[in-house]
Image 1 (spheres, rainbow, N blue to C red):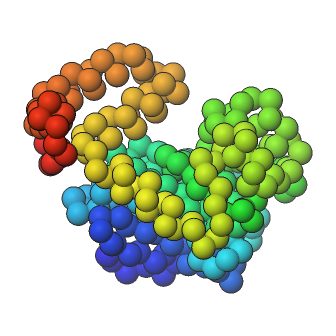
Image 2: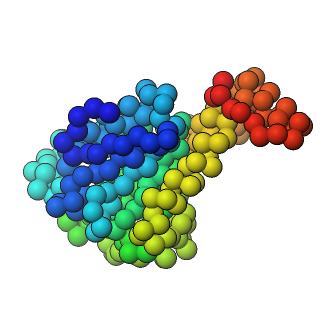
Length: 260
């Protein structure tokens, strides 16, 4: 799966688990780690044997507890813009991946960690997880898409409050707000994510990818989401999986999708 300094990659039964492996730094995102996430996601795009992805953090304390503050402290106005745009582009790779990506949040998801989780298609959190965008405490704002994704997930008012106060919220409040899909005991985290992904992987791969594309189009100011949906519906109807799915339904049997 390639050689990485800050990530662990494991592919099993079509699910690639990407573990950010900097537990001694609470899995903080330094520049090298963000670059490696980009490389790992490119593997996801390119490798047909990878059907789905789980992103998580090493250890029991943190998913990702933020960015590397020592690196951020050295940023100037010019390279700060480049820093933010690079991170945004990489997180967009996750958001726009045509294979399902779940964030398995095992502790602190703060700053860039919360932004990474929000770039994933779904989020499953442990009962001890904490979420927040505390950048204002450093005289900053979120730079990897947090100001855009958080309001879409939890609403403008609450997103404004969290980003302007820098407050953290727990897993149960995050679920009530719509930031996470499920809250589970720590020992159930990975099995829950795998169960969800196994169910998704039993469906038609083309349709799954087009669901992701169409939902994302709803939030893209340059896209007509309804037209994207109509075009994607037509693409599905031209696929072999559509023929298989409808025939299997009529014949009262389980479909065998091939992604064609």
